[in-house]
Image (tube, rainbow, N blue to C red):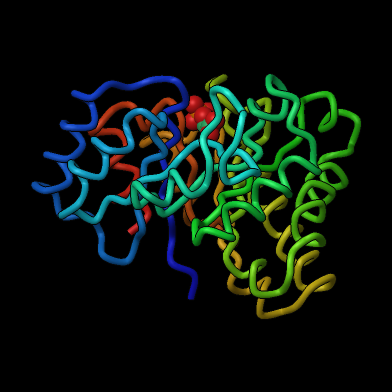
Length: 250
Ligand code: PGA
């Protein structure tokens, strides 16, 4: 059985007081025990997240990492630094990183390797643009991005991955993929992993959906057989909305 994961992605948003509000809400609310919950916060908030969430079910993580452990890379954050703050997860290859910071498939793989090396769970983001979908290329784009990571990893490392399918046209646009559209892509990822790597890897692989997921549409997405959780942007900045999505996953 795959344990659902609801992960929030604050992007370059949030504040110390929002961390505190989440910390208080998580101590007071009974989050479903059968769901993992986590917030990917901007790096300067990691220490505050560690303090606020320490005695709650909420895990925390980073939004990216460099592929080197240390060095002259002004502005970057490394895997060992995230690990020092007890981050459990790190996003890798979010479409904003791919589009705005020129991270290609090779860069994504190098970062995944760096994350696994220090015991982090990489959440690898994949997804097609609207042009690619309209051209009928969704499956080849998405499976290509998945293979660019899986083919470069050893079998043990593959088992640590989480994959988030985030159609670029649905991110921050309010346009959610329909449950059928999302399920179709998730099912094709799982069947491809089954055929290309192994049945055990495919069965254990957690596939999150991301792209304008919110409390109002979470249940219909999360009840699809191959959707094992969500990566939530905008709605993860609202305590009530995010916790409602976590409840829907339970
Ligand atoms: P959104 O963002 O929920 O605001 O669409 C999702 C993401 O970018 O991970």
